[in-house]
Image 1 (cartoon, rainbow, N blue to C red):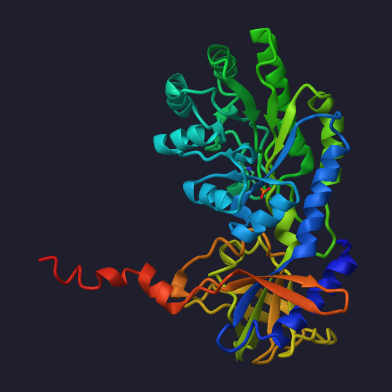
Image 2: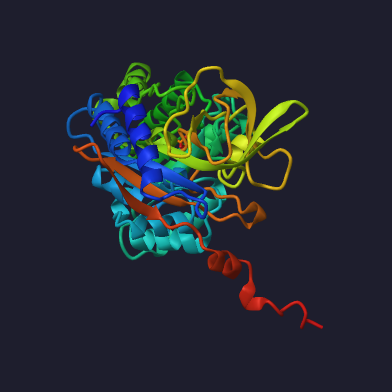
Length: 450
Ligand SMILES: *Cc1c(COP(=O)(O)O)cnc(C)c1O
């Protein structure tokens, strides 16, 4: 089980062919998501090994998978089998983590807008919480005061304000980010130190600098700020009150090839160099990686319904568009995807003489393009396209435009005899479900209102 670029591509080729042969995809199901189970397991194991290598023996480490990257119960279960917990940011994500059998001690609740009920539930269940702001900390204080038992681990999120990456919408450590306590604002640092001194039960600091587009050095710089603040607080209160640092996730993913770079190991090594005290055994560690654990193990496979030409530009109209590749369609420069071309049987189309084509989706707006002027083997109706590296954030963040259904998601495993076995991760959404979710139970409600 490896994830060298060659192995990754070979498993993908096998899976695409098998998906067609086994009928996962056809005229009635023109788009599916596929997940490489071996790839996910390997990524999880690599993450654990990367940090095992740098932390002092015996250091408590929780790798909490950021559920928003793949809100799919079987995926959370698979990752739990590989020793990972969950980072959740809504009641829905918490419910998914629990449904996957992840125990409360392996769940961390973040989110900038937790309600009193969510906070109370977390305390009652024993789930770690990172407070985002002073008002939330006040709510938490009141709950802790009336909580019958010692509370679960509670922390405070800080914004180290080390700056943004290349994607503004995903940069959480800018001067004006909405997340955490903006540490460099006047008086903020002193306020944080006092907040800990006044609350002996507050034992964690949390910083998540950003996601895709943030250089590793920037991320490590943010972790360093959090570490130095923890040292300052512990010094000020005269004991090791902060016992755990939650360093967030955000390892960027290479969307340009099958190369897994940077790897978790590279980041762990950089952290050891940039923040050596973090790993000397005095602090427990929580990480919250999402994209880097699963992006390269996912693939969207979609049928080309028609091909046409407009203004001299060949266009392939496919079933993969903004409903599943929302970021790619609306922010194509920040989220380009590799597109591969297969024939109707799922065999790679020969790459000789590629011609620039638009790869369009099924949504009824002109901008619904996955790729523009992209050199590809000439596509024909009935062919398939693959959108690569789509395991994270693509399958679980459906955009219900045109009432297009959420596609089925299937995990695959290549067996030793060269066959491929599939397991259903999520059934395709049915028309009845779409109609029900769109208010059919209230069909006459408006007509009867007056
Ligand atoms: C989104 C998010 C993550 C995961 O980010 P990735 O880029 O997917 O690794 C981790 N922590 C928090 C607080 C987040 O908001």
